[in-house]
Length: 145
Image (cartoon, rainbow, N blue to C red; front, side, top):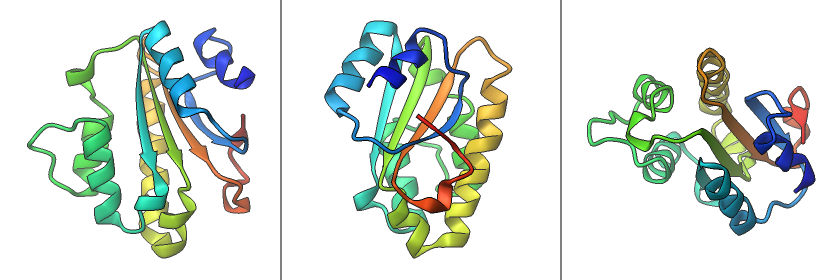
């Protein structure tokens, strides 16, 4: 959890990170509340398809009713989040390997969108972090927390 504290201390640039150690979800959620961050959690054990990914994302991030269940709408929604005003945002996505292994081409699109949207968030004063909790070697290009 010490490395995650770097987020709240402003010592870690916003972005997409791989987390290889266990994360105490309740503790991370409490830290987010303490520091004014909005916390989102996707349990990847329940996400094997694009449709399940959209459903889980829409539910955890409370997407507006107009969310269209497609990649463009997903990108638009996570690039906005104005309906959930906060000092920062953290999305913890555990076991993304389930989606990645079941539908690699769609998972690749999700990763690309995360990267694009996070680049957009870097241009604001509000930090956004996507943390992928996995031991997979497939994401070895990501910085590890």
